[in-house]
Length: 241
Image (cartoon, rainbow, N blue to C red; front, side, top):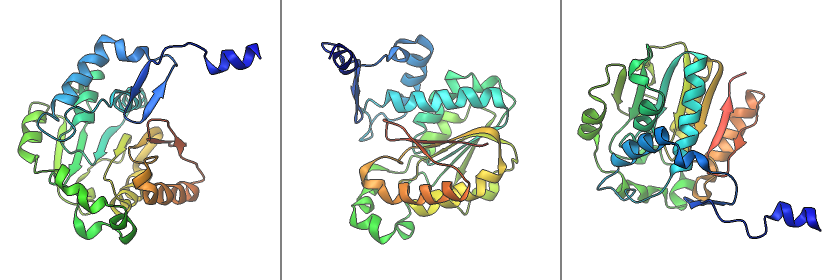
């Protein structure tokens, strides 16, 4: 009984409760000054959008952690599904990316999800209505990342734009496109170019409206002989063997 009470954490204060995740476990990364600066820079890109007041620190930290590992591994960075650049802007600050001899490829339409790529099941789950959350942000992104010489802003639909990634050594990939078709196409294209130990972060993997993406990624991971690590943030994680 004493062990059961200890595991359940009687009287322990909640340390984090936001973005679908609540826990009593250690969350001291939220008090790290470097991360706080990185998160502030990332979240500032969302000012004036429907996401402006969303607390998604844990998801941003997962991306920053993965990018830190990729910094050690060696290789370029890719983000498919950038929107205003909240994740990538936080990463650039957190790992001092501007001082690295790497490229950061930022791929997006910068105006929402292409309707013709949305599957029937995804339309039934209301994902077609997401467009209202993603107004044209291309000029804003150009301003946000214009001072970073190693950032490459690529506008257009995935997979049409993937060939503009002129790198065969990729250490970090973030995929957040809200629908399965372009995500799986990106995975199939990028995985062979990812170095050993490279990390792939799937932003939508565990979120209820995106079950189609989860199923598609599970199938693709199985083909690679792997299994996606489901995170309580709603993200998924794969590491290249």
